[in-house]
Amino acid sequence: MQASRKPSAILGSAIFFITAPSVVAGLVPWLASGRYGLPVASWPLAILGAALVAVGLGVLLHAFARFALEGLGTPAPIAPTDRLVVGGVYRHVRNPMYVAVLSIILGQALIFASWQLAAYAVIMGAVMATFVRIYEEPVLLRQYGADYEAYRQNVPGWLPRLTPWRGA
Image 1 (cartoon, rainbow, N blue to C red):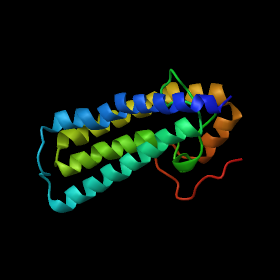
Image 2: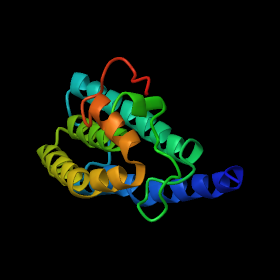
Image 3: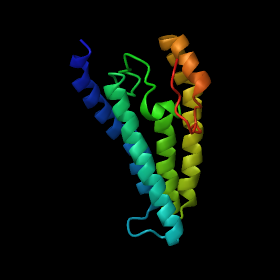
Image 4: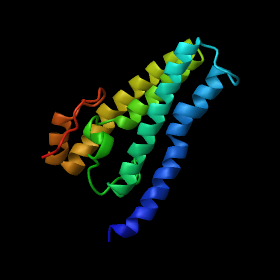
């Protein structure tokens, strides 16, 4: 039964990846920066920025894969998972996709020495935190009950814990 949902979960996650974080962390910063050539920051800042982008992209791809393969759903509210996703990077932080997107945006701000992108990251962080608090957390609590509450009590939302949560 569950195996038949895996291909649609993978496709749905891929579509959501293209439409949401790719726009927020890719297209908008690219358009806002006006920088289409080589980095304009000092090389140390550009290297740090590139590392933030690379790590953020890796975490983002891993988190999307967990939704499709572990949760058999997508991160999109219209096609949620069948089960609470708590494996992989989710054992360290509850909101790895948002943290990864912010990392990618901040990395670009460093690469291009762009205060506009840094301000955009702050605004997006506030929007994401508000969305999580007002919409996501109540929905997850209703959907997964005590499992989500235990997860929420043990795994921080925004600053990753160093040791992975092992679950109940």
